[in-house]
Length: 113
Image (cartoon, rainbow, N blue to C red):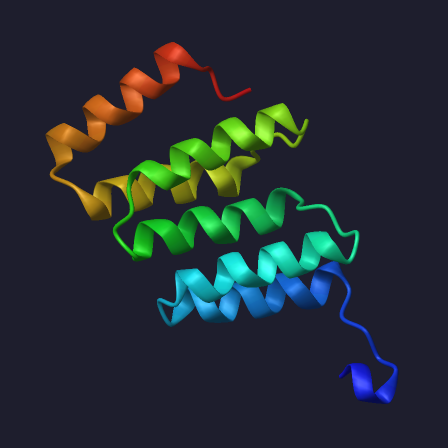
């Protein structure tokens, strides 16, 4: 792309990140996020939601909670899709009772909105 003087924007990065998350290559998604930030693009709620879903698909249940905390520190607030991805993803990763406990613990510690 850069050979044609065409540079990806945040929207394009989100599509790339979504694609690699869908095929389960979360490390590549993280690399793309770092590259995106190095070009001056900040992550938006859509980027974070894609990553939360990707981490859950990769069964990395702790990382989505860390992302929610990072979002808040950067004044990016979860939307309905973010919350749905978190809840659905956590229930896919661990037993229902454990998922419920994790979500309740997290919400008590750090309300979403």
